Each structure stands twice: as structure tokens, then as C-alpha cells.
Image 1 (cartoon, helix red, strand yellow):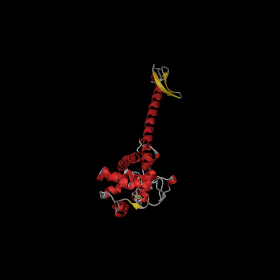
Image 2 (image 1 turned 135 degrees about the horizontal axis):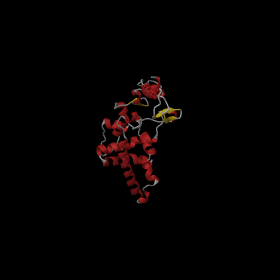
Image 3 (image 1 turned 90 degrees about the vertical axis):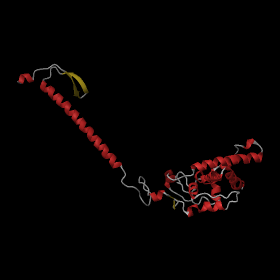
Image 4 (image 1 turned 135 degrees about the vertical axis):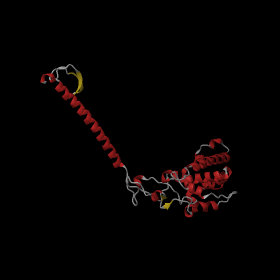
Length: 254
């Protein structure tokens, strides 16, 4: 029986070696040795399979550890934690909403206008005028689209004004022409009329410091341009042009 087990067999097979998987001539290796090799290869395969399963379990466990278990944090901002929703929906300490105190600056200004058409805008539109797209991650109706409409009408009126004044088409594109819809002028107009007292936006400052007195012109200029766009959307282009000619252009001259 011993001689049968140790009888050489003729076979070519792959074997795991220190140099990797190699094809070897096993014709002079006994069946006992061949069984040992096959058993070793099977053991390596099972070990690799168990290792793969262990790695997957470790990966899923690591993913579960990365999930946030804290919804928000109150008080001073902590990096990496979600903010309190009540803080997200506030700007400079003013809570977002169509409350009378929030809309009072715009309503008071519109009631003082001396135009051929009495301008009365709904509260939802007034709130949209004073809401920038940077506020609350753009989750609330913001003024970007009506601001764009107002800018186009303002550029048209500015072109009519400079051409009618100089009787020369070379004035189009000049500094005097372009400054009429510049962020600096529009932001200064909003401040002079006190319609920027309540404005929902996010101010990005170096180091994360927030200064209530800091008013980025590129953001606060949208109050004026969106007001023009809102008037045009409610009362038409002619009413918006009259507003520009009687309110904005005189402010530009001064």
C-alpha cells in the first residue's frame, strides 16, 4: 500500500512559489506531496476569500463610523457640524420671513415715489427682492432672475440717456455709460434710500469673521436692480423706465 501511494505520477500543474504562480513539472513528486500542494493552494484560496470578506466588513464599519450623528450645534460655529436651522434662516440677527419689520424699508420707500403709476408690490415679491441667492444655500426664493431683468432695462435706459444727451453713438460703451449700472452706483443708491437695512445674504469674509457693517457692493447692488425688475414684471417696462429716469438717473448726476 505504501508503494502505491509513493508511486510517481506524470502531471504538470501550477504551484504557488516565492516567485509567484509558476507551472512546474510534478511528474517526480509523489501523490502524497501533490496532495500537500493542492491542500496548500486550497487553503490559500480560502484564506484570501476570508480576507476579502473581512476587508469588506471593515470598509462598511468605517463608512458607518463616518456618518454624522449630530444634526446641528447651537452657539459658536464648530467646523464640521451642521448649523442650527434657526441660524441658517437668519442674517445679521434678523429672522427670515415676510414680517412687517423686514418689509418696512421697501414699503416706505415705494410709498414715497411720485410716479404716474402707484407702485405696490406683494409681500412675497418684496421678500424676494431682499433675498440673495447666497442666503440659506439658495433654498428660499432669491432675486437673481428679477435682478437680471432689472439690469437689462437699466442698460437700455442708460443707453438712451447718453445717446440723447450727447447725440453721439460713440458715447455707448463709455465710462459714463457703463457706470450707470455699476455695482458701486446701485449699492450706493440702495443705501441712500435705506432699502438695504434688511437684506438676507451670506457674507464671506477671510477667517469666517462676520461684520454687520460690511456690505459687498456686488451683492447689495442686486437690491436696486431686482427692484427695477420687480416693477417691470408687475407694471411693465414703461413703469420701470420711469422709475429709472426719475429716481436712479438723478442720483447718478448727484
